[in-house]
Image (cartoon, rainbow, N blue to C red; front, side, top):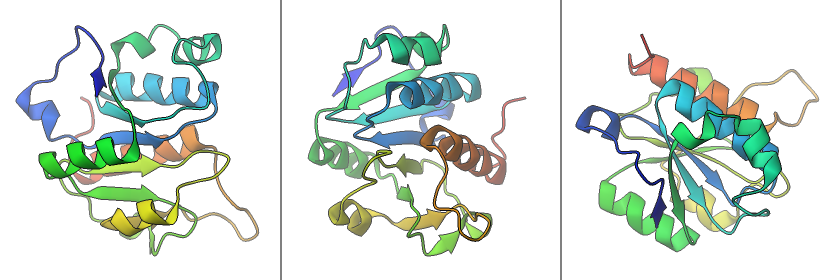
Length: 168
């Protein structure tokens, strides 16, 4: 597990919902999620392997000067992430087109980890099986899915609002 150097969280932030990206494969989207996390004050978990190098210029460009301020933890594998998550007692909330519950009906808990799959492949069945909650963002008929960074923005903002934790 690799944490962002020099950035720590206080006790209040430690129970805030967190964003997680499962094997991200588009650096621009990962960079946009890092910027989002920095602006909303939430941490980000990255489940590797990634489809790009961490220092990819596209990641830096999309994250701009916000990305270095994001609290990021990189996990070497799904198993490493699951070990961390179980040890922290955090519920896994998977955003998926196969979600059983529409996002507006979701009840979020402090400490939830909101997981978003890779753009190209989503997440495998074993990840679906570990989710305590599987959510879908309702779309107009005939549309498949949103960009992962857009979905992450909708998801984390909804979770923060539902928990009364929006930035002041």
